[in-house]
Amino acid sequence: MYHVYIIECDGGTLYTGIATDVSRRFQEHCSGRGGAYTRARKAKKLLYAEECESRSSALKREAEIKSWPRDKKLALVEKAKNRN
Image (cartoon, rainbow, N blue to C red; front, side, top):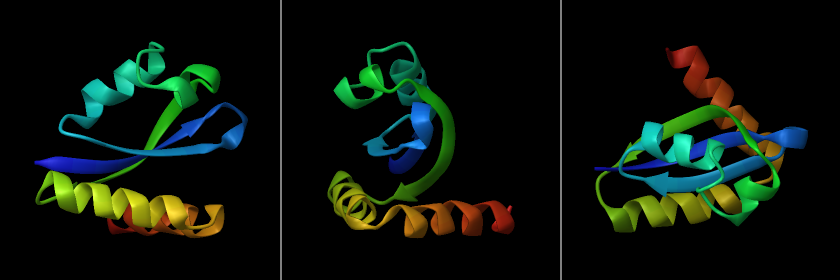
């Protein structure tokens, strides 16, 4: 099972990625082993995660979310918060 996730980084920037284990991946981002973007802008908070059926569907969803403006990403995060 793959997941798409959104992390808030220093300066309020948002990072979107995919992983099979979101908790582990978030810890990698926090420790500086998660990728160049989160090494440069420290990961602060996991804002959102959703399950995808396959790696392919996760990559497609990641690309879709990355193409969105910041406001739309934050609306997705808020919608998920309100569901829980």
